[in-house]
Length: 340
Image (cartoon, rainbow, N blue to C red):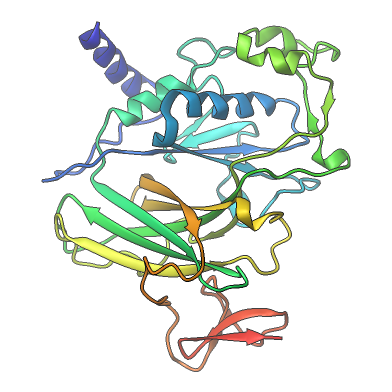
């Protein structure tokens, strides 16, 4: 049975919309984590199945899967500006696994039928392949006011190369988001009270809670929500340096701010995620998540920044600003300055 399962996984990788992520000719390989970037919205009546898909993946794979629920839409209270730039054009709900193609966040590539839970098959196929690099993340509050989060990442590659066409991307995540008003209600096309074929198609037991729910579901608590990002599309320039030496660790430290962020509700519910992105393929090679440690924890050395000491002013996302026109922290001549 085990041999048959592995054969089916191989056939699935070849036949599905996701190509195999096989590692480079590596001397060392590492366990892989799969990143599920799910595109959703409170206004999207089909999107509850994505919430079920994320819940099932957590049950099936634990922390080997990192789920990111990206909310978008003109009336969406949890939208952030950076993520829609990589949203699939096929509409939502949709997801990407390690950015390897667009899938349904519940049925996946449809191995068990497009109205049944099947995203686990696609995830299992990716987890069966080792990664050519590992990332280990530590996160700590950079100040007593909990304004900035310091990310420290140790990356280890299993091969050597004179080039380093990779980049690290940082994400601040939050669990437990909620609110009042219609924009915080989850639209639900699966409700038995709604005259739609969708409620009849998705007959699996795990969809029963949505069939029994009303068309507009209030008091929803939203988890896995990104609230700020840095380098999300291709990675931070300079975060991985050449040459890459097999087995040799590379360290990188940078910060993400919570200032002027309207999405964040409770800083104690924040956590950190790092992605290692292959700039050549656009794929996520590996990832890690970490709880944010209290300010004063000595696990990380003092923060380093990628902004040069050139007399210019930058925000914490590395973008040059002519003049700070809002309260916040900026980098000038390589040092942090508070604009009041």
